Length: 112
Length: 122
Image (cartoon, rainbow over all chains, first blue to last red; front, side):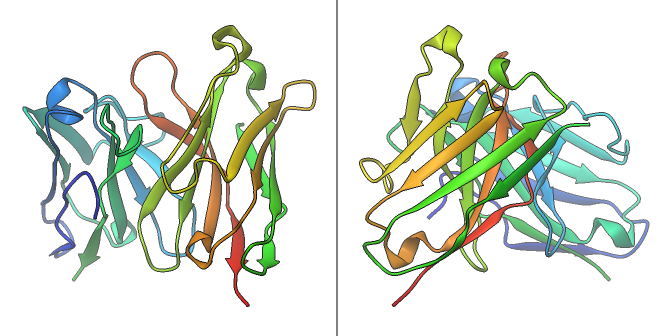
């Protein structure tokens, strides 16, 4: 059971907007720790997509955006493209016994 | 360009040992906190271990499932990260990724290697 909660799957047609939620608790996101998002295309290693809640590393398209409020965070993909079909994991830092670097179970994004 | 290349994966019987290595280039390894993260077949990501830099005394931390069995270490002179895995169990079967860790306050996992597959089976 993951410390952070994500929906198992979301889907959308090309060009649409999809949102992935990530819910934590008072020992991680609610404690003020940042949320980060990682993209994993099937058969490849994960890649950092968003860090510090809403910052994009160099090279990440601006159709990806993130936000955080209270004990939750969201990743939004606007203008969905075929190459966005992947698994997306939220990640934060936790001060309980769960382990320091915690993840959500991942959300599969399907482009219809 | 940042590159992390894992090696040392393979098949081992339950109770056995294996050592993973990660060769790093494209950044100042001695200044980087490093972690191992694993992914069991068809499952999500799980943080395994962390090692800080010499500035922080090379402090280490481990996830509860591996504490006492796994040891993370680093050789800054060789730009290499290691994970010694002892008393392996079938549930340790996974792809193990070498990852750089932000130490500026974000606590993000920044750059990922391509992974090394470890299979624990009789």
